[in-house]
Length: 298
Ligand code: PEP
Ligand code: MN
Image (cartoon, rainbow, N blue to C red; front, side, top):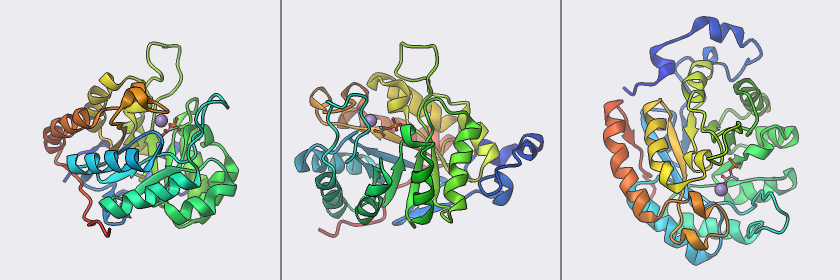
């Protein structure tokens, strides 16, 4: 059985202090929540690796990357069709065309797909295509989105707001669960601090703390957490060692040409090497790296 901090140490005082976490609190499900996405189980003994480009850029780009990450052992494909960009002049995503390409990649590889929703008005459309709905860092406290995804039956990948405390993060998850959806995966993706040598400061403290406080699965995003591709393997290994249930990683076959987040994207080769390096670390914790049991239907 896999080791994680919530299983091996229960800080009863800390848990008792979290009175407002009525649904997400660890006492609701002391054994943890296991979420099955098309046969991929998140929150159990296996580590789940979600990988793919920051943004869907073209059919050829996504299919190339999807096939590569699947071959290296990723079990879920990521890719943004609606991109939250700081500048209104930056690439905003292919929108519905991007969703269509994601569905094609799922058909070709068998991998379930995760993609972000930026607006409640997109939710029905995104739900028609995606297996996992990502609520990004900038939307973590968009209460309208939280309430709407709480009513849909899809798995939600909730990313921590870049300036949010762990309590605020858990209360955002509480909104989704209060709406009736308990299929919530939490993602630590780095927070803003005074440190500016990296894009964000990846708060790995959050992993054991979250595993104490909640029964929900916790994954880590070292791509946005560092903003530097060469740091990603180190922080991925650290995230697994500190008890994360999985990783979400940006991969691009031509990082220099990527329309977003190239500097933090692994190449398929460096992703493959990382997957090899993660296995012994997973094994030391009694875990395996999950693989998709689905076969392509195309
Ligand atoms: C992303 O996953 O590409 C993304 C925009 O993430 P975040 O919301 O964590 O910045
Ligand atoms: Mn990105």
